[in-house]
Length: 147
Image (cartoon, rainbow, N blue to C red):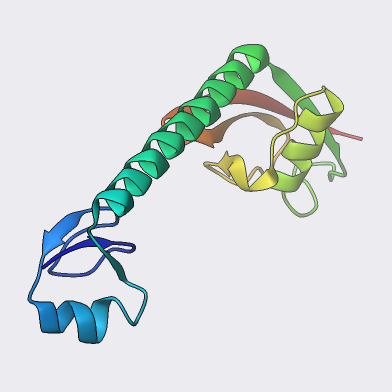
């Protein structure tokens, strides 16, 4: 019996795969638990359309991320923080502070997409990564200065 998997099943296949299984396994476990659908022609067309739409949506997200990376370009952000006389700052510069500085410049980047390779604890210049999409990475420079 052929079924279309709705989720990944270890040892059987991945989401949207059409696999051949024994009828008892399909009728008693896969279909009642919502893990699979019977592979009829209409269900195959529906899955193919869902895959096509998901691919279109993923391409749009990637294009938006590439456009944002081009607009940001070689931006250098200045982040002011309290610091001691030796140049050591109180606390550390966080991803939230970098995201807020980007938002002030007009770029809406979520704080979870900001990757600090090292947590800045001194005044100076640092490189910060932006993980805009799984295939689009970008780097900007931040300058940490005393307020």
